[in-house]
Length: 110
Length: 117
Image (cartoon, rainbow over all chains, first blue to last red; front, side):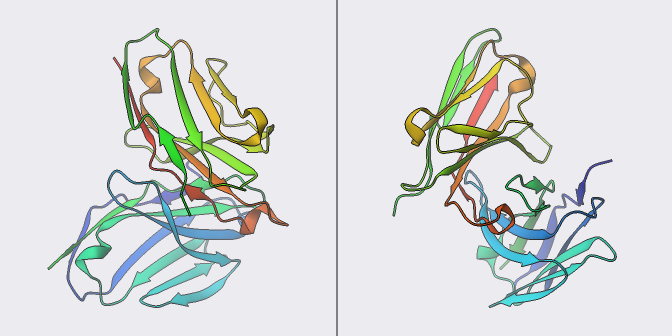
């Protein structure tokens, strides 16, 4: 069983829609949760970071962590065509080693 | 500020040959990481340098892979001899040293796409 499970998609939505991306994990020692965005032929770029359970909001993006369910989510409001990318969830226990999900490909249609 | 750079962007080699990938981290970043994404799989951690010292190399697949970071600046990842299953995208990332690894922000390079025929 993978430590982090993420549906690879693709997920296609119309412009302006609310997008919900999520990951589940099995290692209860994970405490640091991240979402990366990766455009084609580029490296991953940190989008959101959350420590332990709770919500974090940054503009149109909201990250949620539910440690009791081992489930994390990223919501994108008012999605734009420029949001089309691969979104990767990632986690750490407390060290520097990052464990990634497989990534979800998102397409936002104009 | 220049980001993490990697060279080459693409490499196509025959099975059994040797390839060396290079990573130049962001200036002043003590931490340097190598990751790999094999087709259809998730990005996987290979190893972590702090300056020139290997802090964690638990993700290195086997002894055909050798990473170095002489002088604590740029790093190289050599694959010798290359096998078909080594094909994938190799990412380098760097970060500033922080009190705890969990909060460390890693900046990724664009990756080197390696194809072994």
